[in-house]
Image (cartoon, rainbow, N blue to C red; front, side):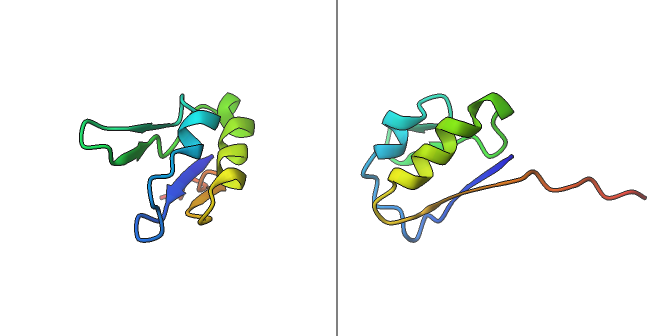
Length: 69
């Protein structure tokens, strides 16, 4: 899975941090940080966090397929 956050849209409301603290957090400057490729076990929480984002800044998608040489 791949989690992306549109930082131009994100307003640091923090709903994602409450919904999926294993994936999202605030750093010491109170800026949102996230795991780009969290464990698949976190998918449900990550999707809930995306749904709770009031500005729809979070996307949860399948992991990109590896490209064969």
